[in-house]
Length: 235
Image (cartoon, rainbow, N blue to C red; front, side, top):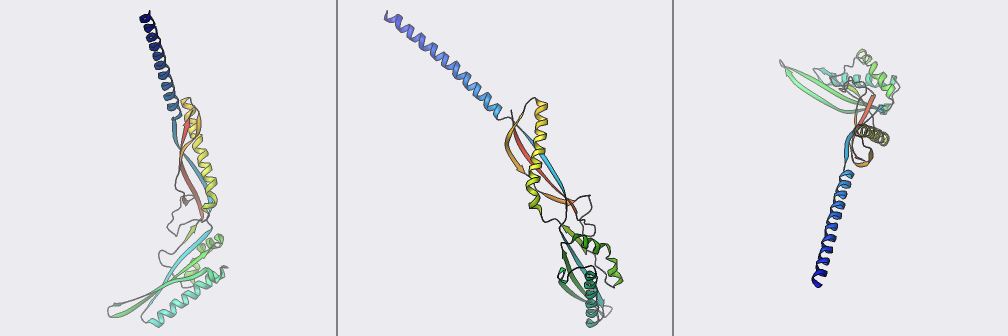
């Protein structure tokens, strides 16, 4: 009798153990399945672009005079400076908009003759973009005034208010990324969940219509661009 009772207890224990193993295996498998599903994600990129107009113009201007004695060359460069100031004043710029940034004197002997060259550098800095464009368009008037600009003198246009457009552009890039993720999810028969991770790319500011940025061909019309990389959960 005691032996029969012991066998029944052992049989019951074995059955419970088997049930526990099956249940544990099911729960473990189901848990792994849910974990795997929760870990499904897709990585996409979103693009945002915005056309802007530069709010700062800077013109680095270099001009020189050459002669055989210092007083004569200096007088010529001083006259060129006055003509340059008169040119910008006539266009409505303030005296403070044009400032000297340096000068250089070079002397060399050529067949026993001492030749002197003085180079003067000036900087125009203004937020009046329309006036700056006019100054560039009419710069040949400087030649008529006897001022010849050296190579490398050119207007540069800058957009300095990037922080003002950053938030909206990041949001637009994220929306663009979600649209791409939703298309992927639609094609794969799933849905898009929340953001798993996101990386904001660098903002770039380039010429809007592809003009060069070498100074002489720079443009105030810019295009701001940012690309974000977003990892979305799939459900």
